[in-house]
Structure formats: structure tokens, C-alpha cells
Length: 283
Image (cartoon, rainbow, N blue to C red; front, side, top):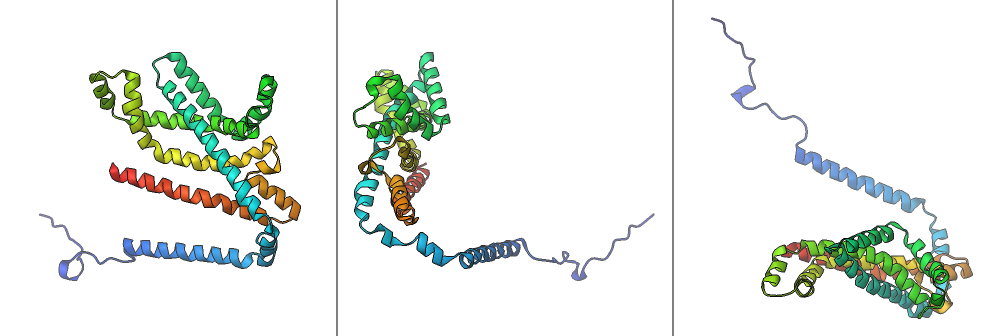
């Protein structure tokens, strides 16, 4: 009979002693190392920057003397108006296209699909050029549309927004349980009445966060309307910053225009996060 020799274990017969750092300690060390690297990089940027030049060319607010009224009374107001007009056009058209995307009529579905792919695939700048300069050539009666630049901006940006909103609305409608529509039909409602009264209101509650986010994107895209050319009283924030920067040979107006954008986009971004958290909590 043979016997198997076993190597003696640690004293006391317990488990082998651990060597090195525990996983929790390793995570802490890694986290501290990341903090140190971040601080070092931030210090390198701060210490390496020419603050005298930055103050002179980017933070010289004396260049804004006499221009604050134009900034808040004209440029910011125009930016908000352009954005809201485009959003209204995009929402109305997006709802129609979104419903066509779900239609049982094949030509409707194909038209909606083509519309979405075209206006979602083309740059917003190109769409504005086509609306502002291409449409008057193709349709001479639209050479001087009602509202002028305001009309071109709302239609151009509205078409782009509609393509994204249509897909968002379609997804929202499909997220509503089918039982809601079936229950409405069992009560004698027509399909169209059930969609308008029951399904679409529930779908809009679902898509409020992405629709609000689309408003933020439109607010930034309004900076593209400079390509259409307009008078000083039609300037939006970016065109205002560019014009004043060229006049003063200083970049401070760009910084001020950017800060004006942030006064709108940051609260909207906060609103989007609150709405998303509220929906997640409700679910």
C-alpha cells in the first residue's frame, strides 16, 4: 500500500495568508491616482496658459460698452424666436410624419421613411441654403416669403427637427401598450379618435425628455442662420458675436455670445435630466 505525502500547510492548519493589496484597496489606490493625474493636468494647463493674452483678447469686457442692449434686446431675443418657430414647425410636421410612419397605407410609410432619411442625413446648413436660395429659384412666388428670413429659418430648421421628432414620436407611440388602443376601440371609438384622445397624449408624456433635448439642439443650430444673410436687427447670437468681434478686433464678443447660449442651454439640460429621472422613478 502506498501513501501520498502532502506538503505541510501553514501553522495552525488555516488558509494560506493573503499577500498584496485587497481588491478594495486597489480600487482606492487607482481612484486616488486618477485624482492626482487630473489635478496635475489641470495645473499644467493653468500654469502654461498666457493669462495676460487671455485677459486681453477674450475677457476685455470694455469691448462690449454700448452693446449689451443689442445682445439681450436683439440677438438673444432673435435666437429664441428662431428656435421656437423652428420647434413649432418641427413638432407639427414631425407628428404628421411620425403617424404616417405607422400608417397602414404603404405610400404614406414610404414617404415618411424617405423624408426622415433625407432630412436626418443632410446637414442643417445645407437645408438652410436650399430653403433660402433654392426654393425661390424653383418657386419664384416664394422669392419674398411672408416673414422673410424668419420664415426661411423656421422652415429650414423645422424640416431638420421634424425628421428627428418624427422618429421620437413614432417610438413613443409604439411604447404605449397596445391594450390602450384596444380598450378604446372596444368602447366604440374609431382608430383615429383613439389615437388622438388616448395614445398620442400618453406617447408625448413618454417622449418629453428627448423632445426637450431637441429644443436644446435647435437652440444651438440657430447659429447656422447667418448663411442666409440678414440685417443687423435680425442678428442672432453667433452673428452678433462675429460682427462685433470683427469690428473690435477682439474675441470677447464670442465669449459673451457663448455665455448667452449657456444661460438657455444649461437650464434646459437640467430640465431634461430632471424629466428623465422623474420618468425612471415613475417606471
